[in-house]
Image (cartoon, rainbow, N blue to C red; front, side):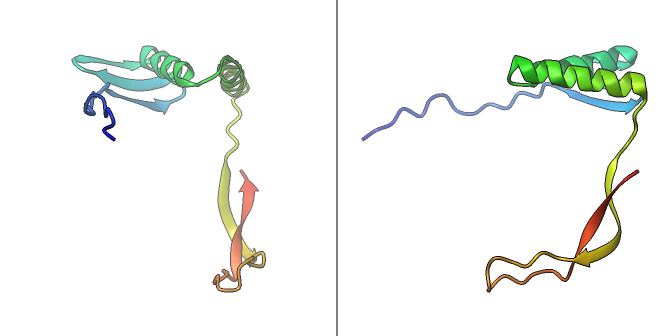
Length: 105
């Protein structure tokens, strides 16, 4: 049996984008560079387009809009004291004595 493996993999650098603040970002794609609000809109567009289903795109767009206009900055960080861990299912598994608590800031 001889399988057709297709064309070899070829990497294509599409550039870099990063959000650096509220409604501010930087973007570099080939020789094109921009910063600020335009780069932020480009970042949003690229990430929405990459989502798989239309429902996901709408949901994420609504959530991002809510967070943007409500200025909701809640973050879920693992902080604080440790508590006793849940018993391990396997007897050969070494279970940790404590696990972190989640605290919304």
